[in-house]
Length: 492
Image (cartoon, rainbow, N blue to C red):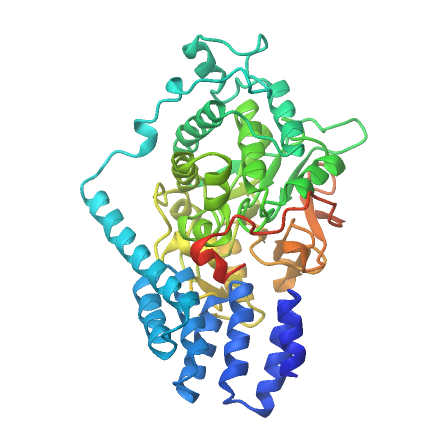
């Protein structure tokens, strides 16, 4: 069973690996190697809390087994617990003093601890964010740039006029569609235009509440369809699958609005293209696309799962900082037609939480370890009543009673969330009151799952979910997490 589990782990079939390791542990519950291997599989599916439990057990049963410390350090690093991770990597170095990889990981933790301390010092000094001082006007668009320009006349020298084109509702749709075609050819927008997109979106999202209201359009996208809103789950840098969604369902427009429910980036190696496409549509027509933050629109996840490295490879460090500022301002949830609550992870388990509490959650920051923001970004449903510690190590698991109480208290009918890969692209739980939708098919090129999106239509069959499933489409030969560097190598 252990050997079979190892084969599944190497093949990227992480859920199968977890099942086989669990069966093996029924016969040898104190086997530190199997516990450590299952911890690694849990890490791969971001169940960091369960990984820590297995690593703890492995260390108890064999304190000389270095991989137990290694797995616990990896999970703690993903949870922003850099000092705990550093302590365990120090233990690995002591157990294996000639292991260069362990020493490199220890040094990465040292660096993360220093950066965290530096960031806290900067916050205490209330230093202005980069967006307050970054000036795209100083960036020259070279003649060798062969991509689209926002102005119909091509490149212009009037910086004020160019800036005005990037205001919400002003960006020409022709520019957006030309950019999407350019992305398909694995080319980027010019850095000046990218900076303007980020600065404008940062200001726009900061003006929104943490809970956004989305109406059903009064007009349908075409004569043969009903008015609708389309809800998509995680897309994780799978740009060519996003293009397939648009091919199946039409480009975003005022009469064909989308809600993308977080985790636009990381894992897939076309994350810049995915998030830029979404932001461009937002600036062209704010009511055609809505974006909610996921747990991967965060600094630590971006460091580990590839987006940081990707932005630095395709642009530079400053634009990555601007992306982070945009992520910090993204809304955290939405309500469709006053009846459907949509958020990336799940519900806060505390009784009494109202929509007004969610609407007023402070943003402009990385998620704290606990509280409403973390609950919305990280929590998962469970089949039994009540709440339990999350398998992820952040947020909670919430039962059908918590779902029912939250919906009833806020005069809502349905919870839609994402955050978890599902074989068929979606799963209905909690007596039909909770739907998980996941829109990245064949996740990480290994999972074999379908993707899905949901239509919520107006009219006689009002707000009943209608699902569309689809398979993955081909993409250029760039592997998932190709840009993950440093500690990201632990999770690739």
